[in-house]
Amino acid sequence: MHIRKKRPWEIPEREAVPEEVFLNRRQAIKKLGSWSVGAGALAIGADPLFGLLSSPRVFGLFEDAKPIIKIPETPTSHLYPAIRNERFVLGDRVLTDEELAAKYNNFYEFSANKDVYKHVGDMEPRPWQIEVTGLVEKPRTFDIDSLVKEMALEERLYRFRCVEAWAMAVPWTGFPMRDFVKKMRPLSSAKFIRMETFYKKSWSPGQRYRFWLPWPYQEGLTMAEATNELAFLATGIYGHELPNQHGAPIRLVVPWKYGFKNIKSIVRIDFTAEAPQTFWNTLVPNEYDFQANVDPRKPHPRWSQATERLLGVDKRVETRLYNGYEEFVAGLYA
Ligand SMILES: Nc1nc2c(c(=O)[nH]1)N[C@H]1C(S)=C(S)[C@@H](COP(=O)(O)O)O[C@H]1N2
Ligand SMILES: [Mo]
Image 1: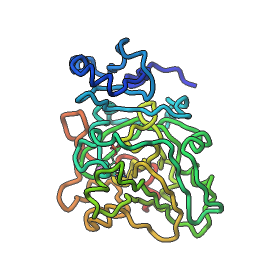
Image 2: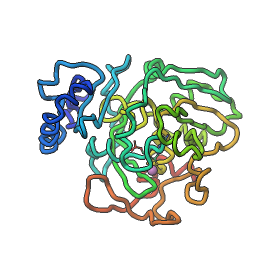
Image 3: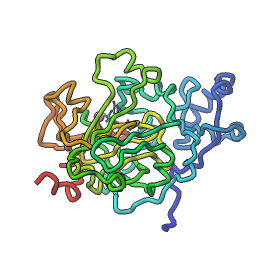
Image 4: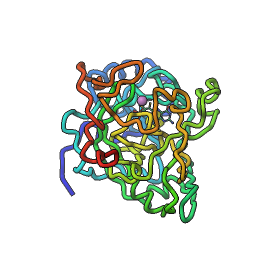
């Protein structure tokens, strides 16, 4: 095990701040909130005033007395942070600020704008089950915490590139999709893996009001892609469990593909013989194909993909083929 310096986002998790306390102390919080901006990553919960309260863990900046980052207290919380796998390094960029990543999301179930974090409050990441169906030896339903206990968690730093031409770099915690596929013993007839997000209108303004969209969100990979070393099922980010806006309690991370392939809040994993439908391909087939590999030479019909804007950085950088993961995945597409 490596001994390393504490990273800025590894601030100890602080205890809770129930909403009514915040509402009562709205003015004080506003002051603390602006003070926190100057203090960078320092958590508002670090104030001893708030240290007495408990669960769920909440930290970061506050807006209108609402936490931006809310971490559930769960039976597997003690497994975070996990040991970093040093094979995956960023190389050409630094990690994105945690709060920036938590405020600039795509999650159509909650919002079509970059204010997802304001609308995820009704979603409950526990209890949570993941149904594994289709062409496997033994279909099975996992409780999220038993699944996490069965897999070996690790941390990986990955670049991440949205099709909208912004990019970030974050530390994910989770396990290789390959390990999960092996555990399920797919039949030889299984050629694809289809994944599905929750369909629950009481949580999701998108599913209530944009009811004509092809819910639930679904995505897919070929079996070769799903068993590539890079394909990752993330249950955490920045050294703790995923907050809702990042796809709690489990989401896909395939860093050589555009962001929309990285399906969030998975409830079903289905092994299939045929290529599955996907949410974005169903909606706009000429703009979002099944493969969706990052490729600077292939423009989106409405914009160039040659460069990208790094969140929190004032300049654009050149987009790399397969988002810079050529050595891992080029063989898949030869
Ligand atoms: N269920 C679901 N998963 C989703 C999306 C979505 O709208 N719904 N958006 C995708 C897109 S377009 C991107 S860029 C990433 C964003 O992940 P992040 O918000 O954690 O950065 O989530 C992907 N996964
Ligand atoms: Mo995206």
